[in-house]
Length: 422
Image (cartoon, rainbow, N blue to C red; front, top):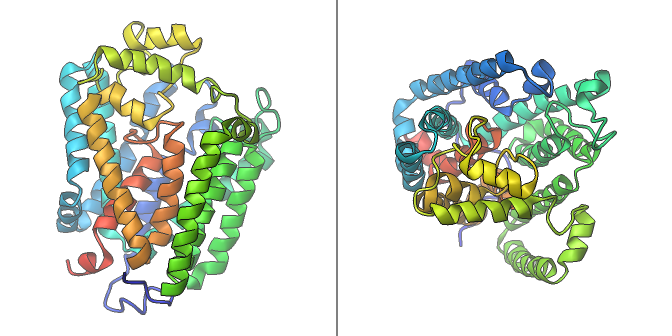
């Protein structure tokens, strides 16, 4: 195996590379801030009226435009990074094809266009930024979100702090405490990686990583806390592996052993795990949604019901009505990224997503031993994998996490060396 060099910096390794301009960075940061949806709750509140809902439909258009600006800067790089993602291309083709059999074609067209633009945004980031620059970009974005979350929660607790179902739990800029906690769990990992990949800004990014951890705790989300612990463990694993062959071998042995022990604990002591996470055996009703979704999948397993068509407010019959009657409330998604694909775009879409995910994880594991960027990608992907089991975060239109996933997946296949040779 080839191990990464010991120095943590990047500029000394690639002195010939030209850093992106301040304007390019600003365009990317603004684009990510729009996708974060951190502006939704402060502007529209919990119950947006019809006029606000109409505005929300076009609120992400500026982000699409900024993504195309990034692409236009280096269009050939965009082509090169895209052709390295055959399964992602197939996945998007299935999304488009699902319009033809969708139970609500107009909804699938609108949301299919949105997820296509969201995916292009992730590819644009991978085509324009090297690993250290990408880490710095994510860190800057999270710095804005962290500061805004603290300001809103402290200065306007009526917006940033929940008062009904979970009184006292912080939600910051998002609708629920799990929204704040989950995003900050990702953010702490990304900021920690940014500190390691950018030594000149290590103190600043480490400080904000600590602030992100504070928001996870203030959100009172045990699931987010579990994600945070897993992600920081993964970051520590990559850091140790890349110290040298001896430490790498020891860390690999310990990591594999720890993963097996954790799997055994989940299988043999699930009741204790639920108690630790503050969940019941239904995972707060999720298993009821999964059962209902599977029954609907059985009726149309091959093609599904059309991309994102099931969850439209206009759907008062079929899959959505059945799920409402069974689960006793109206879910917004399947609460499982894998069932979501099967339900929406059928078995072929599920297979395409599975292959894209496997390609990404395989490249990430290899990168742990060869690529400095694994410090950024591997912890994020580990947390993404965990969250995807209980939330629909894959192939989601206008979703911050999907943009980050696509950018890291594409970057794993489009190395800094390949980018610099363009």
